[in-house]
Length: 315
Image (tube, rainbow, N blue to C red; front, side, top):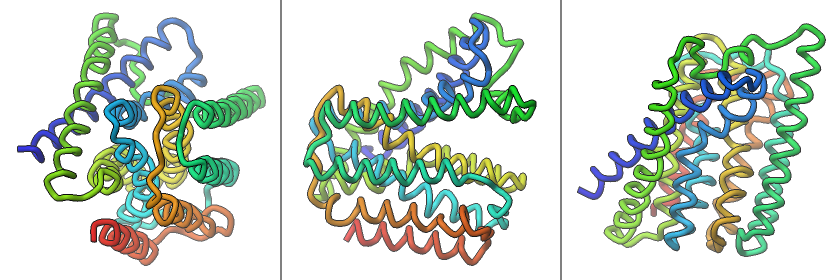
């Protein structure tokens, strides 16, 4: 039953996160917050809500391995699995995308996270540093988007935030917000408690469950989004989704969780998993900077690397 509870917890988290995004986006638009700001901030935070609740719950429950494993494992999965599987289905023409600046910010965020990890604990100091870095990145993105808008180059996608419905009634907005705010902590409780039970059942550290079961589960929305973007020939959306998700995982999720409860870093992270995460991120270099397309061969390579990584973690 513990696996059933874990699946139920994950489903509740994903559905509640989607409801919260829809409610928050439409509430923000109704009260006059520009669609541009909603797209760059509220949608990004909302889609990371499940991972955030898991990390906070795990930190408070004294299982930091699940909190950190969820983020580190998700970032690795986002590159190797979330980009690998869609590339097996169809070629993603990443050569036409200009994601160099966002990618550079992701690499810097990853390096900053690794440096802070070597302090041995993610505490309030690390939390402030991570959130300050996030604030700076968001500020620069908003300024650039506003400059593009003034120049008449506004991106159409920024005008239609995910989940936006101009005709959504107030009662429906309230319902989405309530479902999201109730469902997220409930789903996090179920998933974290189940993950801890599974770790005890199989005699493995909670970090292993965080790096595998929890990380793969919370990466499913990104996988679904990326597959659809690849099928629609929207390579910029696919790779942008992964880059944005990875930055938010490192800076926002661990940043906020660190302010709530200190999270000691398992030495295994320092020896292996953090470097795998960095290595996976660097694999994107030729696709971002050197005009390479992400085809089926690379899709097979990325997917195989992820399977190999999971096997090494589990054995």
